Length: 280
Length: 318
Image (cartoon, rainbow over all chains, first blue to last red; front, top):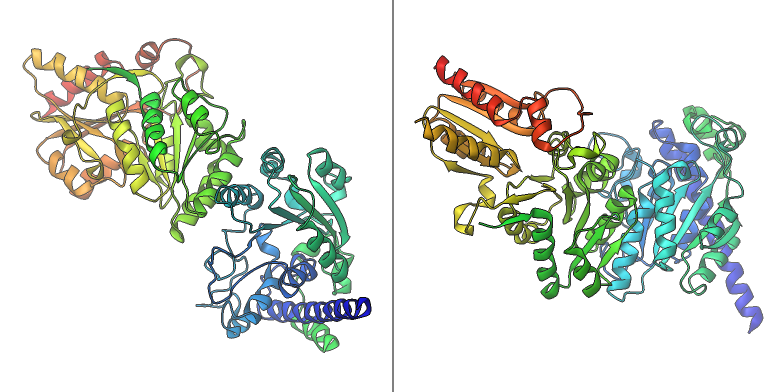
């Protein structure tokens, strides 16, 4: 029995890994079509998106997108969500053809997604809004005695916004344990490594003193991501939860992985194509 | 005729509505009112003081509204509108184009309500900066009776709104809900000849006072109180103004920059009426002077004497 459970888990992780690989490839394909998209920032979150959706950690119904029974997923770092498009298309939130026309006239998919796109809850693009809005949603769900979770994805550079910390304090004070905040801790801002701007470390300690339940994982390890988010859903009554996902900005593109300016770097069409071929 | 602080009457009315409507939340950014105590006590689960954190006030209100709640977000007007302007832009103005979202921003301290607190607490920009945002309504009542009546409108009309309340006790202007139509946006309080004062908020009290003074001299001026700055029934307002040869706008706000004066001037120009026009308010200067509101009005040529002088000059030119 135990072995069966183990092998089932192994299968799940293999599945998640394969999916993440496909999502990364599709993300590169989108960037190849639309070089305006923020590639590096989207690549650091590939495993996070993949695990949340293919791992069924986020409850959703693509046929009834606004179903009250859905978990709310707020992508506060909207600029880094190109890698979420293939997942939504895969689950039927919108026709897959859209992926071939990102940033083109008449396509619903732009460089920074808003709630005009099925699957996105809020207006994104300006940083520091998502967690506060999530607090309001989490309060509303509690008031209505609903058990859905509010997931929020923020970037680490976004944590410089003061409004994030207003919300961090609020969530703890109001015991919003139905919030799971995921920090895509890729350590690079737009112009430099975060540590050269304002060092955010020790980030886990910061959240702990603000009375949050904190977990740290390798944000590219699907098993770690899956297990920690899953266990979050069961534990720490009363505390909002934060998952600090250590990630690499530009993950999968060697030249971006080491570049302090990766945020604003584009790949040439040939470069993207070569990487896509590699993944096939 | 009762004298009341709009804020208190407004909150009391929200309180009554909260008793029957479980769908209402009241949030504040550490800002009170004598009438807030009972609301806080009786609706512990639906009253939240978010602390001195206007940005979060708007964001949390947005989240609640996205889940279908009617929300009042209450704070001092300049901090509510200007500290959290981008939150209002992104989460209310932009959102409201895609989704139904009923957040009512209740700002106390219109114009120079907080006279002696200085320019950080004065609010001379709010009409302009709030009305430029798409999908947001702007309400600027002149008395507590209007403010009270707006509560039911604010529940019914499920859009973001900015409610600009004066902070001082002011006498009643309206006596019955039959006296005005909120949707119309304005009310012609005095029908006059030749010249009309168009005002909002506290300045309507001054306009009425001037009207009384001048009628003793045999001069009948019109007084139009504009309370729903946006959306305003402009066609209907123009119909009223067409009867006059001259118009003076009065507002406790910056002029020549998109306030009430701009609305009226644009309207007049659109019709190419050739009317005489004068706008009165604050020029591009903050008010660092200390003193009562009347004193500050005098310094800034917004006192009755200065207004009457302008009226008479315009009348002479006709």
